[in-house]
Length: 331
Length: 255
Image (cartoon, rainbow over all chains, first blue to last red; front, side):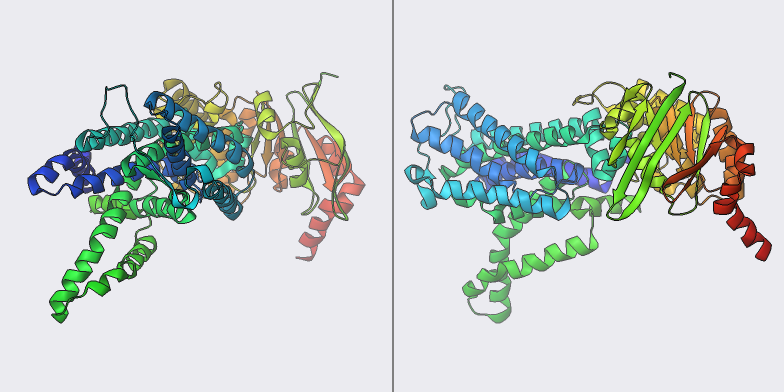
């Protein structure tokens, strides 16, 4: 079974083990921020995996996926503001709201293809963004602070940093497993067939529209879970969570990590957010070392480095990081 | 009336000022191989499109096994047993050969809202796919990626996919397009086998193949049926010779 020990599989396992041990590293290094950062990464990885279900496997490039982060987050925030803090109410409400939004917008968007699909999903997300902006009772533009995290009737304490991290990590692993089972099931074959050749799918007897719609709803609900967690992590929700640039971030995670596999977007989320976090420091340190002066101002320009890196990945590593690692294994 | 499996009546389709199908009426009897021939631009592919439901006719009707299917969407026609192969190869290039055929079998094995079990591990789909692959002679290529097959093999795979949908009737849109003489004669031999069990509507440019295979032939010119009959009748029909075969003979004589 030498095929199990490819470079790619070793990296995947190492990444998962690292994610499983993050709180320990945080204790070892005395850097509590590490857990906070990786909680965010793990939560957004759930969103990226869910986006990739429709984008990578289903060929439905949605430019409005952050809408579900917002809907999930606002469901938690608004209910908490109205003194409903039980997760057993908040979370089902959040996920059902996402399902309904996905069902309605999906039913309309999936009648279009290609660029039109991208634009219409973007338009729906912008609509919900402006709904957020207009919620005067719930902070409007400024957002809404969440004073109490979701309560699991005393069973799970989400206010504990380590508990919360492992809770999110378990959600990510569950999402990966679920999506992995799904893409290899009969349903997954239909979704991938419809991406590859929708016309042929219909001619061999598949009503592809309804399968794609169900897939769109599942992805929306999974991303809603990510939104619920994100609001709890930040203790805050604002319209910025569902700004179109956030949808763009999710696309970048999936493309950077690799759309061909379930785990690719997790790599993309880790890579993008770690770079975002560390590049300013690296620029400051390297710049300071080279010029001998303080380079605090140069830190602002981290995006100048990140941009070309993304370009290189898109141009030369079509399968993203995951595709690149697979190529190593072949030699 | 039940003798005809497929009845096309007065089918008309206009694209702007162009009449692509002009009151076409064709009966395809149960168990026959019915060929449609005609020069380029005669409207053969438009006709197939209307039979499969991808193009909606302006007027006229299509009946399959006695029931009106004129307004049915493509996938419902496939469910009734009307299978189609494409003129321009239309496969799932990123799947393996057997995955392509298994997907066709899956379409006719209940709904696919099954989210958990691995579809590639399901013997009922894999076995049905292997049977179809054996019939077209691709069994030994089952695990290759579609992209690795030759053009001729792609055409064979097209037919295997149609067969895996358990059809009662095959609509074959130029199955020999782009094939060499060897591949063509193998395809003819295979179609001879298939016509023992299935009703076939064959659209084809290769006259030799058409006259070797067809029980009846319909000739389409500028969207109109100008003749319909046995191969011998078509060969002897003056109008056909004028409109179609004559053109070729003249070419052959001059060339």
